[in-house]
Length: 169
Image 1 (cartoon, one colour):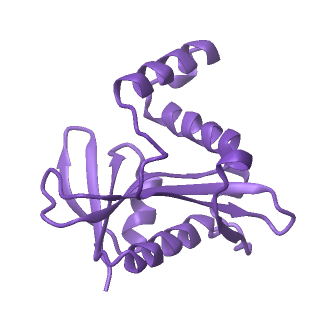
Image 2 (cartoon, helix red, strand yellow):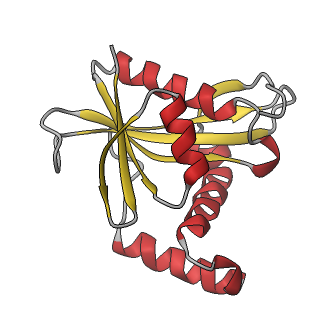
């Protein structure tokens, strides 16, 4: 870790934070594309729009929350987006699902991801839930190491997908 910085964590404001959210979503999407560096920005944008069209998520529906991590001078540095989900797939009780954890590159390895995960876990507990889970690609070894260091356990792997979860007490 470079040097831990103190970040302010706040709930997002759709009207002022939407462009930052969209930027983080696109940047995170790029990491899922094998050989993303071979695509133009326009091609990546088109692929992202196709993905979003085929797998739409209504952010205005109840249960979605985004927390923004900001520097001391108010610059957005990262976010975590999670959702209170009803039972699905292998989960038999409602849970918190992390859709995205994204840190702007110059703020990585400064403790913000840990702070955002702690905030997400506190929110999970406030919601009366005792499980938080997520999906990450196998090749994203840095993210996997982060989750494991924060107490998340590998629940299942399938092809390139790793599913982690953590019981919140």
